[in-house]
Length: 342
Image (tube, rainbow, N blue to C red):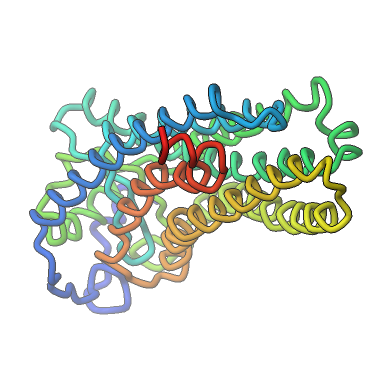
């Protein structure tokens, strides 16, 4: 890419700049107001619900829960942080042709735009941490059901390494964003008209992260694809661990419940409740995070213009940490009784 790319758009071909812009049934201002209200509301609700869950874990957990409660607290603390970060950043997502952006309003100064870019990078990094937490949760959950697996892979310092993996994924995701998805004068020109038409916003007034797969000439941008391979690897390993250890955990608990004696039934019941909560906590991120973010990567990679539909991804991601604690709070019997009765 060079500075002359923006001056060499083909006049009438299949490049994104020549694609027709459809009118939206929802006005720009209404959508901005709704998304801001949703992000602030979900941020507040998520911080409150996760704080309540932390108190429930500390004071109302079943005795047989053991060290598993520390992982639950770890996840709730992160989600509280994420809720506050999302409410502060107020990110928008927008895909246009072979590119998608994550952006936020910013003053027309270099320092404001730089600060906005790094805030967005941290926000993107928290997604990497989130998907790693899903995997860690299922691995640890299986270890709680399989004593031999726990002693072999989750004992001592190995458990600390498992807890550090989400932080490694966060730093890795942030590094990819900061080094490979920075805006440039070429991307400013490429996205100038789409931002103006869709959001009534000048590109100089926003800070943004851009994943750009093809130049306006249709040439493949290889570094972007290589960077996205890292993102896909993190998402795939997370999803694989969720499915693999989820199935093994289900089979282990089902077998244990069939062969358990009455004296150990209470312990098996707790495991069953936690597994049901875990299943719900798998469906929620799949619907609100894996699938929407996967769409953001997939369609621009094929140079397919999804336009304003992509802006709903910011909404689904904002909803996730607000609703994620609810399955645990209402499926685990001790927590449910405390909330409903006390």
